[in-house]
Image (cartoon, rainbow, N blue to C red; front, side, top):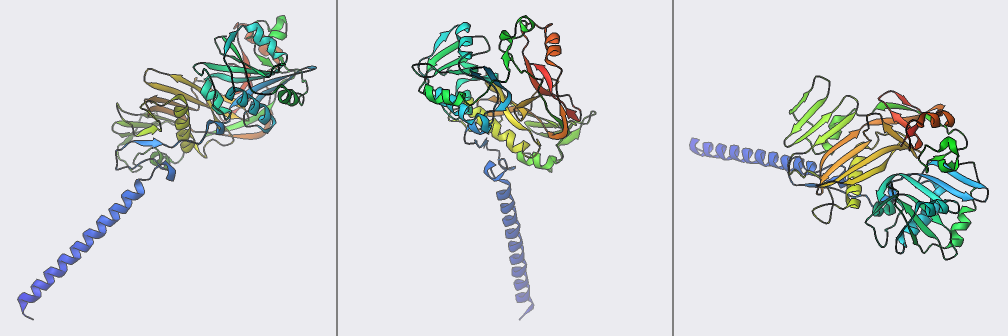
Amino acid sequence: MDHQTRDRRDRLQNLLIVLLSVSAVLLFAQNQMANLNRTWSDGHLGSLLDPAPTPVNEVDTLADLAAPVRVSVATADGRCGLLYATTADASLSQLSTLLGSALGSAGTWTECNDQAFRAALDHGAYFDFLNELPLPILAGLLGTEPTGNTSFSARQAILCPDQDGVRLYLRSEDGICRVCSTAVQTEVLSAEMALYQADGTFFAFEGGESYARLDPYTLLPHETPESAVLTVGNSLSDSSTLLRQLDFNPYTKYRYTEKGGTEVIVEEPRTLRLQTDGTVVYQAGDGDTTLSVSSAGETATAVEAVLGTRSLAETVLAGHLGETALYLESITATDTGWLVRFGFQYNGVPILFSDGSCGAEFQLTGSAITHFALHFRQYAASSESSSPLPLSLAVAIADSQPGAELVTGYVDEGGTSVSLSWLNN
């Protein structure tokens, strides 16, 4: 073989080696892009390389989201009250089912006066969801869809047995009361209510002059309530996982730390701020739809907004809340979409923040999540129990605020523990 032939062969071999190397690099890059391009069904948001919008998967139903509720059942000897419970509690399962059935079979709504609403309390089962919610949301929390007019909101409900069937009363926070017939049978509701025994629970309007300055529908216990002291800690430790979940590059160099310790990650047009107390704040740029909820139209419905934001909150906060859970605090229509707020609750007892914030807050424009704030706070029950001030002292303090509504709850002030206390709802 002459020298020229050997040179030609060596050049061909070198070219083949280069082509194989390039092919291997391209195959590796394609594999990495495929791994990065996972969706929420794989536990991630969209691709770090693909700018296409990334919808947030919906959870199945609102009924999976346990809602705190206070309940009073009229008995032959007085009232039986549950000051903190949830719609998922086994002890309330039948009553919750009956309320859902009533909302799902509601007839024509008519307005009634407050006197009629109070009269129904003496014969029926009362539910207070602590916050006013749109009727489709309230019904969804109980596993059903409302019938008839669904354009209003309500906070309180009464199932009242009647000779012609069970009547459903609803009351909103502005004092408007409504009533309608339902398909729930009086015998079924009466049999369920008969299982409850009076325990001295009463409403403020039944308590005489001492309670006259409280909101009349404040539900009060006969004895001072008690609940565990909760230990509290910052649960945000792995920012890399959080960045992946929110479709940020965990290895980005576009990050800096402010003087107060807040870490700022910038991927135009989006910004993520990780505060030292475990609060995470997200801000999208104009027109950015990287985080969005699934919706049938351009603007999400109230139910779609709650399902989508709840899915994102629970995905990101999974394993970070300890013994507490999310509940829907409120949903409010805005000029561009929705403001959805979720709180934390421990066995039906809400946990509030002293600065007025909530566990998770989302702003939606259309179906895009344009802003949110999340608290990474882990709560655990200690062996120590706590009780609020005696009721008489709490009422005396509340007298300076006419119309105050006393409820039990926890207040997180940023410390290492929280105790049960009286709050003005």
